[in-house]
Amino acid sequence: MPGLWFRADELEALLVMDDLLETVQPGVLHTQFGPLRNKVRQLLDDAIQGREPFPTHRIRILRSHARLVPTPNLTAVASTVVERRRLAFRYAGRVAGETTHRHVAPQRLVYYRDQWYLDAWDEGKNALRTFSIDRMSNIKALDGTARDVADEELDALLTAGYGLFAGPAKHKARLVFTAERARWVADETWHPDQTGRFLPDGRYELTVPYADERELVGEILRHGPDVEVLGPESLIEVIRGRLEHTVRKLRSK
Image (cartoon, rainbow, N blue to C red):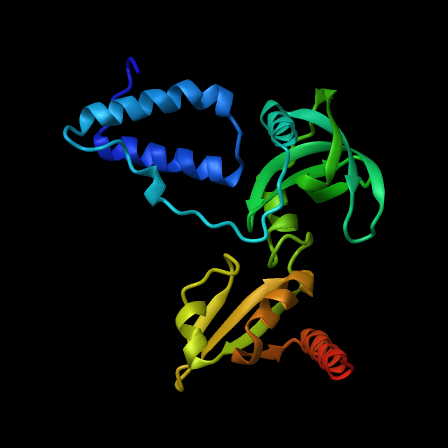
């Protein structure tokens, strides 16, 4: 690669990132990056004398609950984000179970928990929305420059609270984990604005801002009896209701 010089460790890092991209979304940029990938591998083989080709088979990337997005769909959406073009598509929403036509101004491509999303200004709703790309169809780039929303506004409306649900954070969840579970949770980042502290008995108290409790409830329930919800009361009621409903269903078996 004329004009580009890499150390062996830098070439190895490029190959790791290449394999990561291929695992996250197979086929994306394969045509564009194929020749570059081959050249990088050749340079690495030449730089490391007496060693076998880079062992990509020793890199293991496990995806959890991933939903496949057709490569043409992801490429089309990504292109409009970069090129600042408006976008039209049919959207099969999961919450309402309805399919609607959307015209949007794409803002950001998001990869969150092994899923691809699009943050966009919804022209019909006149508001910012987040869309699952795997639920899009009939994707078409439109004429006209996409409206730009300032990063500060995007962060305030889409990332102020826990998870993907939009809206400024209105509540703070106070959670206390057992001393055993604290060994994991204390090292985790649930939200950039979270706070945490160890209690004298070894338990860990975590405070997380959120706007909508739906995704947060799922995360709390995942920890079962190893977590106690101290507040707010509305979140405690939701968790209690979910657990009571689960017990009733188990007893009815």
